[in-house]
Image (cartoon, rainbow, N blue to C red; front, side, top):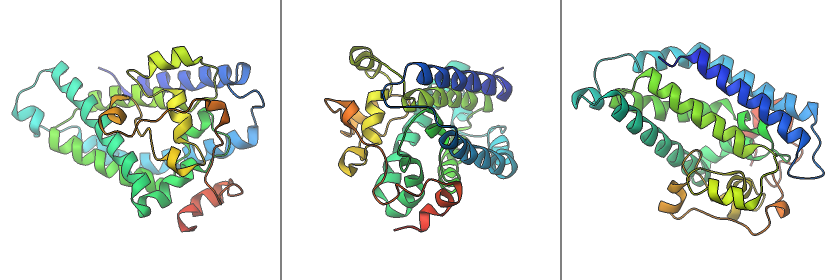
Amino acid sequence: MFTSLEQNIFTISALLILLTIQTVFPYFEDYNFKAKHALRNFGMTVINAIIINLLISPIILLTTNQSFGLFTYFQLNWWAQLALTVLILDFLAYLWHYLAHNVSFFWRFHKVHHSDTQMDVTTAGRFHIGEHIISLALKISAYAAFGMTLEHVLIYETVFLINVMFHHSNITITEPVDKVFRIFFASPNMHKVHHSIVRDEADSNYSSLFSFWDRIFRTYKIVENPKSIKYGVKGLEDKQSIPDMMKTPTYD
């Protein structure tokens, strides 16, 4: 049985490893680990975690601990349920990400994540709580409809989170290695394009775990020189404090 404790151990270990690697072997030569930047992003992560654990986790536990749903109806075995849980949740992650960029109301919340002008592993947790609530509502609906188990959800979320941290990290990875990796999974060079300040580039590469969603729906984009990419959202370069990030949805 895979538990939330094991999930925390895996994700925190991955975070510490990636923090160390990006500090010692940064992709951008002018990168230097800034405690202020990290504390702001971690601050948003902690705020979100507290709210989610207090208000939403009980609903997640309820919807992943019931005897109805399509998986139960079709009497699928453990492995079939795991495979379908991973595919369904990852498609929903892609769909939500696409909507977050293409529906103006959702973008108001999602641009908090994109407004980081120095993307690194800490950016992986820089989200507005409003976005978490909307995206979790979509996921929870899937948990209930399909009868997903908490164990399968935790397994997917663990792999998902580790890859999200990896492709946000400012670590040195060669293009040949990245090219092989992105055959299957969303890679650092894919996600660098996604965080470009150029909106046409940012509106691409919505995949978070499996990269094939972008190829299927023709949202895949790679630039020749990822080091030329500038991060952020135009007009939000100076809105980097936690209070500013919380108020970002109100900014035009």
